[in-house]
Image (cartoon, rainbow over all chains, first blue to last red; front, side, top):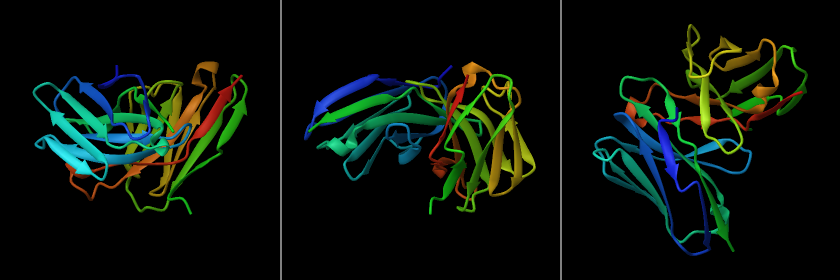
Length: 111
Length: 116
């Protein structure tokens, strides 16, 4: 089963609006990462947050992590049409050696 | 040039055929991975290799095998392809030189496989 589950599964917004995606996971983690995938292409790493961090920023991206609730959120501010993609969270579980991906949120930004 | 390359990019094959997907990387990373992605779903790990002599099964290894021919090359084989192996296959790499909490993965462009 998937370790991470994203919510919502799909999101459609207008250009300039903010987009928020959530990820929940089941077991203790070492870190949590967000990746982006343009249609049918390889994933690109966006941001990593460690288990002892609560918030991290990178450009228009803001990631939060709540280990007590086993959840994370990705906020994209001032969205652009080029942000249209699928976004996946991925976790490295404690004691494990590889990433486990969620099922993703499909974001559509309307120009 | 791309750091992680996959060949072929598209492949159509018939049930029962053996096929090989290849991955090469110029990033100098020691860790390599094979994933499959089905429509509307996330990635599922098939096999991973943390160095040339270290091969590990992922969550869906049945029906697949791998070979790590060199640090830069990691190939995935479908011994006898079946239609439910139709999917998008991705290779990825990472660098163990980073601390575990910093390690991220770099993906190839994918191979689209159709098994008839």
